[in-house]
Image (cartoon, rainbow, N blue to C red; front, side, top):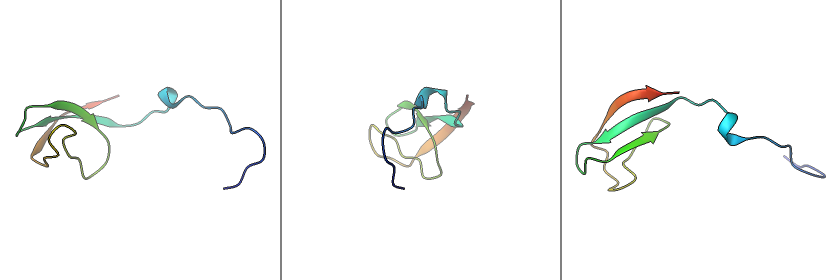
Length: 55
């Protein structure tokens, strides 16, 4: 997309997304994620468990 002039203003914090809270079974890190192929940001493990949905 090509635009002339300023970019439209928006606040990323106001966008509603369905984040979920996860727990890594390898390093015990708790983190929030979004998407299908979630990996632990601390140890890069895919051995994770969803704890709850966060809004």
